[in-house]
Image (cartoon, rainbow, N blue to C red; front, side):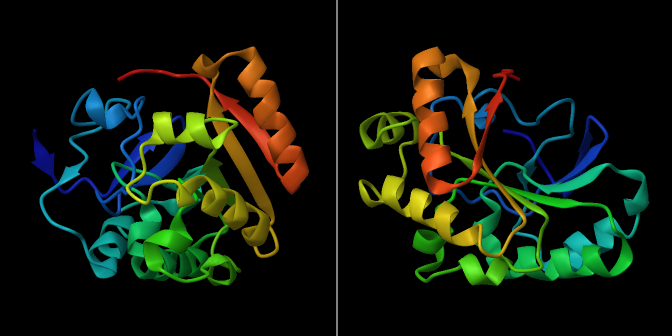
Length: 204
């Protein structure tokens, strides 16, 4: 395992922020199983947990107006460091109008042991939540969260609540789950009032 302090990297015109390696899940398809980086980046395994100040210092080296979006997404679950996420997002908001997205497993409430949805008001333009599967049983099999059976319901509840505070909330599934499960996932998204995006699985 190669480590570095890669706190930001570029993918398809977007700037991705790698603010932590912590994650309560061990998804079967996670790209962390396949290498030390993603999409040609330097290693995303961090030498230490960065502070908000370190992440902001890294961002100051970049022209944030030049990216089509800024995404909290790296080799960890960004809401594991929710205070860092909020501090960094506030800095981004203060210097650019570039849209901010958070890619998350939707388990922020369990991670932080509180209702976190209101804390996302004004923080980002979009929250993308990994639905992964249309049933609790399939979700647990694929996602393997450390919180166990409470995870699926907590993720759905978070999505339903956070949409009150964030303009765009979307569930994502990977195309390998098959057409039937994609349609079942779409039904779940519609029942909660969020949209569904089907992602192509690209192993690194």
